[in-house]
Image (cartoon, rainbow, N blue to C red):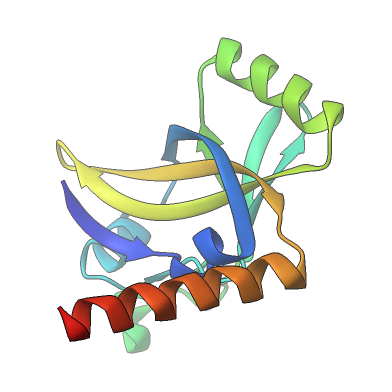
Length: 145
């Protein structure tokens, strides 16, 4: 599975409890552009609307900028393709506690672009500092041994 895009900040900002694989509905030009690596997931998230989940704040730049349609919007909301059972389960988990659905990475699987979604809880600032300290300590241990 080839990574198309990765949201590195997500694993730092959130405690990921569960991951889910979802398809994404794209136009032909967006698919080509995403396969070329022009897919940006930073600060994006998934939102439930009318019994479906939508990816908001992601950006796919046009494949051929000068040949793109006039009304093309790179930041438009894109529908996520999930099974009904997955949607029901996610609805229950999102309403239950203060969870968020964050895209962790986009990758190719059998020619299709898939999104790995993480069900996570936001970390506090003190938790983030603690993680940085642990990471630095591990790095120093590796250098000295």
